[in-house]
Image 1 (cartoon, rainbow, N blue to C red):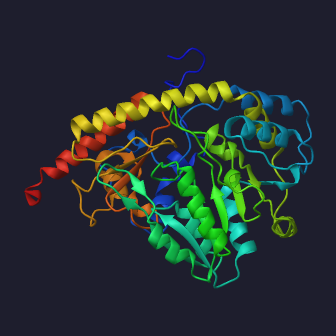
Image 2 (cartoon, rainbow, N blue to C red):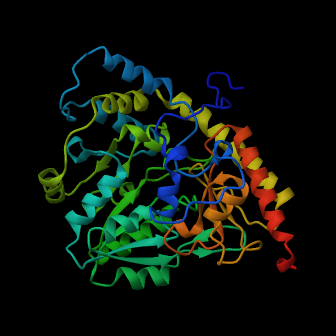
Image 3 (cartoon, helix red, strand yellow):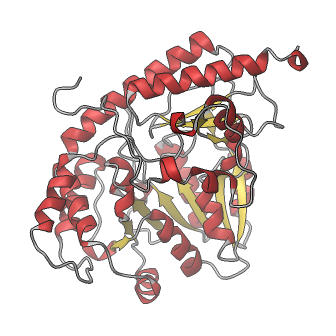
Length: 409
């Protein structure tokens, strides 16, 4: 139990239209895929997949929503005043020593809608978008669904579960004149890397030298391990108009369903194109929640981060003891564990389906992350410790049963 916030509390999300529990099959397997053949009753499935938290949102957000509910009109709403800017800018200045002008800040209905828009505003049809893999799937979706070509540079995996950028390959890819946009994920999903200032400078310099704009998706930046520091890419390139920064309360404060993100666009031409073509309205409750969370949510976040640190430490101990051939490094950031199970599986096994059917655990296998993720799984540890424990025990049991099959001898 914690002094102020109870992160051990199990909160059922049944009946709330939660994607985490009710919509996973369509998302993970597609509408036409065969239904999973579950070895456990459906009501016993444990959701460890989509990147929202199984924790109550902070009072800072809920109180701000309650306050806004006292005004009974919920008409068309846009971000006209400076409340969100003041709260968010103060947050970035204090935590990241990063400042930006009011006119640079745009509001979107989430980072995903922003990605789809930015691909269209920056690239012409036939242009290419670059990203590092394994990659967040929507980098690819936003690109190919807008008829642009998605190209990738594979991260180099080390034996201890770490990842590094292959700068020779990156430089080759980014110098292709058809590449107009680089999607950077920082901190990186799914590996959890926080890129060093040197890595950020090198990527930024290569992009800018080749006329490539950068969308830096920094949605996980507040979810750092204790002692880790985040540097916004834009802070290293003051005055550059080529870096677009996406942040949001959705991950930090578990407000994903509120559909609100902040997008910092220093290029006036790109901003005017955004304003010409982007749907400008926001949910008035979301606007209130975001400002309230940034204003008063820091104590909750600090306790959350300690709780997540302990969940990761527990997971590492469990894997060392029970699945010693698994490779896992506690990530620098995010609440997502990226676990290498190549010692137990080959690429013929779809791990998303395997762990759903054989363990009753809903998770995302490496095939969900574009490429370069074979035989890995991504587990969402933003849940009560008892849920982490139950899911890992079920994963262990399923792997050991699989390992003991006669054809595995």
